[in-house]
Image (tube, rainbow, N blue to C red; front, side):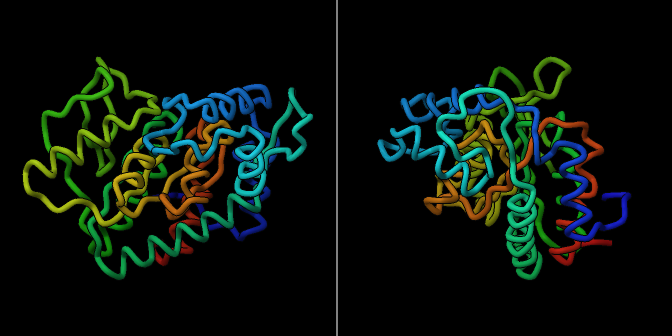
Length: 262
């Protein structure tokens, strides 16, 4: 669980800007536009497990959604240099995610948590899993002996991730989540009622009709498009690769807003 005091909304916004979780983020405009272009051209690597069909073939339409839901620079002529995430949008999305978590807690739902970005977001997911478990939610235990993404799908502290050799893997792939859900279906187990994840883990769950929320960087447009289309309940915009301890105030704010703080 977070060890920091729960910040006010404004204090959290200031922290997000200071640590570059939002505001002037490290992800460059060139990188963002390249990813939007690849998604629009049909490169499924950038679809993060969602089936976007032919609905997002216009790069400018993708940019428009990313401006509205993430806060990147709106001007299509801005092709290089600094890009942004609007911290107000980050906190707004945290508030929406808190509503989803509060509902899960009230219904003692089956929740599966997973991360493709353990280097940054593992602590956020671990704290969320612990808080939901403490109020009686069933944190889904994944089937054993699963492999995906050239690694082993494992669970630690209630959070699923991929281990390759001795390293936790940064992966955008939907395959690990697909492996979990397929194995649960084969075993006749009820699927999660809610998935809290990121990257392809969240996209895959949403595509399969499971209520899903996710965290996404400004160069990962698919989850924002998924929220715009209703495949995901909430997508929280943030830089997903800052020092892990910097996410603690954000996590404390989320859990407090959800009524899950200690």
